[in-house]
Image (cartoon, rainbow, N blue to C red; front, side, top):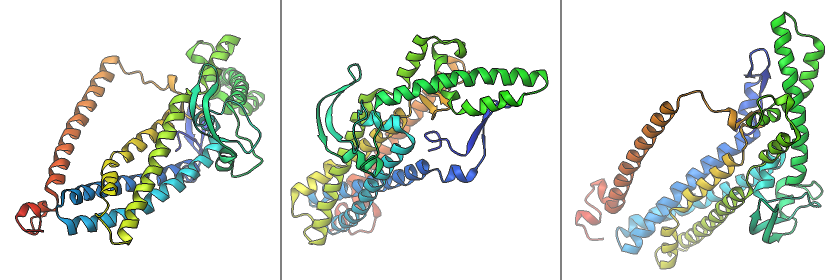
Length: 372
């Protein structure tokens, strides 16, 4: 959350680093708050869908019916509450985007232009980054404005307007970078003038935008119009990964809501296992929480680009000074470790899923020889 919305910290030109100014602001960062509870609730959904799907598989196989019905009912109840929490918190996350991450919101919605409020929500379409146009768009009137701004008169800024704003911030960042060099030179000479310090304080919030230019030119202050335009273009992430990632996540979420509601209805009516299509739907939905979570990660982290720390540290300046051999060796070690962990976890999970409650060793279940 702090990397998305870096509150409670301030850049200190004397130490050339970000320094903590308010621990409370970091903890109560609205973006961090929403992301934490949204992520926790999505973990609950993942567990509930797994239990529901495996219980459905037992019922389809006709194994351990009383056990499967109980676990089915518990998963349906818990999953319904959890998925509703995820959806509500996702809506709140969208509202926070409209406040502190307007670039990400515009990219997610392929909002190329600023439209008259309340803006329409593009349900589906094919965004074209080159033409800056969404082909075959199907829109729901007013929906985006109501979700993102909770109002009918506040606009959702489009990418064109955001680029224009970013260009001005890049130009301010060039000034801030030049003043930073002056401050460092004055400090080394034995004294910093109040005029230079005041001028820097007025534009230091845009210093990060000036640093975007370092990808093309070594001297930020002398960047020409072409370098500035290139930085402006990079200040907006590619639209199509965010557009489709978000919609896959939302579609998976609402499909899971339908599955949990059907399962909950079957549980309350004491009809668990009677409708085979509900059981099959639940079983084949097991991968959906992972798909939704990965798409959510893409939206959250790719949507932050070109920043490692929002509007402060560009990604291209975040690389360490490690040698390539060190990076490759650590990366290979991590990949090998997690592949091994994945193999072990899959083996154990499939083993205990197949064995089911018989693994408890109570003598009451399918593979323990007792008739169900």
